[in-house]
Amino acid sequence: MAKKTAILTGEASSPLLFRHVSPGPGDSAMQFRLIHFWEARKNVKGGPGIILGIEMLMIDAEGTLAQGFIGQSRRNQYEKELKRGSIYTLTNYYASNSKVMYHVADQRLVICISHASELTKVEEDIEGILTERFRIHSFADFEANCDLRGDLHDAVGHLKLVDGQPLHQRPVLCTKDDSASRKVMVHLQLKDGPVINVYLWDEAAENFRVKFDACAATPTVLLVTTVNPKRLGGKLCLSSMSSSRVFLDEEVDPTKEYLTWLTMNPGATSSINSVEVVKAETLTISEIAAFIKREPAKVAYFDCIATIDDVKLGTDWYYIACKDCQTKLNCGPTTLLCPTCGNENATAVANYRVEMFVYDNEEQCTFIILGDAGKELTGRKATELIDTYVEENGGDGAELEVPLPQCFIDTIGQTKKFRIKVAPYNFTSSRQSFTATKIVSSAVLPPKKPPLEAPPGTEVENSELAESSGGGTSATDDQKKAKRIKRSG
Image 1 (cartoon, helix red, strand yellow):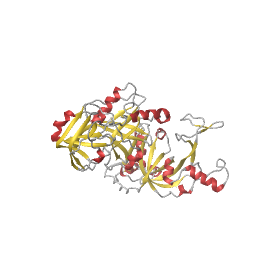
Image 2 (cartoon, one colour; image 1 turned 135 degrees about the vertical axis):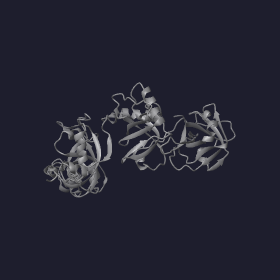
Image 3 (cartoon, rainbow, N blue to C red; image 1 turned 90 degrees about the vertical axis):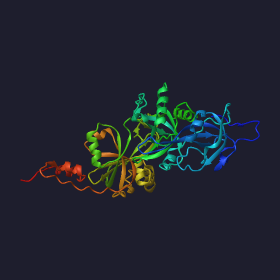
Image 4 (cartoon, rainbow, N blue to C red; image 1 turned 30 degrees about the horizontal axis):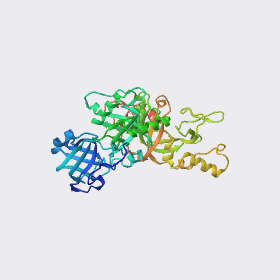
């Protein structure tokens, strides 16, 4: 980024800085670089929206960002003079504090072009005004500001999937002139958080396609400005706005810095399967089982509300995992080996693997509580529970058989919403057990659906009737009751 130096020389007074702007009309001269401008629209349900004018993102000599506005009635007068990256001097303006949603700048006031305004383009570039400034936020920040419709910040990360396609095979993007081309959905891995869905719309989607296709090598890093954090189907996502811009790999400093970080952390670029997409639907146990019967083998995620009935005893409730990737470690001659990372001297950590018997209104099965889901269920890490038991009972942890902690027994009777991972082995296994990777929240079982009565003269399976009505009890009971209901004499 450019260095900050004196903005003007040989003038009687310095331009007004954005932080000194106060509400209402002003006649002081201000000087800024125009970073970006876009159409301001009022959304209309079922229509293209009403164009209100032009919004602008501006930066002054201190690096402070401010938002500007040119009303639709003055658009023709000024739009042809606007050029991204150019320096402008503005006198006679109106500073409005009426904007309450979707702020894209530090200054809360919007600097509006009024009837008395004079906007002049400065022909010579002024190095003292930065050419760009980003407001990059973390996953935790987006989570905290989800659905608040407040400040719009920037996100940077590395691409995992583009429109469901992995990067190791150059993704082919839609170029048709239809509704599908209005959107590009990418899976973006943030440095400090999980993979997150980012939806690029309209101009942001088109700019992404143009830049992506123009790159000789498949791009890795993406920065999206002014994204709106919102929850879709219970999952945090980021959505582009009219003000959003996209940058790839070597375009700007933050993407260059992220690329450098990736070279120093090669494990962060491990690929994910193109079908490993979180499905936000909340399904019953029998609906998940039905999904497995009708779909080809793949990885999928669902939410499922169930009550914990019991905990399986007599088996190990934890395993020794790689600290970096959570894969179960293999024992070498003198060290622990990670089959995923290839590390022959891996750092070990204890990870949960607890089998629990659960039920809902229709069915019962086994949930395998894995990894962080165990911590979310009990409030404690597996390592902490092991260390506590060792301290209380003495000896070496490697020599002690640590029984299932009481905190798991105490969860019996609790109802939770579980995040369930369906893996390829579920499609061939005769045992109905699913892996729970997350405890989404506490929950209550929905009311039971009333059983349907068979219409006169029909023949249906009791098991089919139970499936369609949401009645039923368990898989075993359904099999015993699979008798035909026939019309009597």
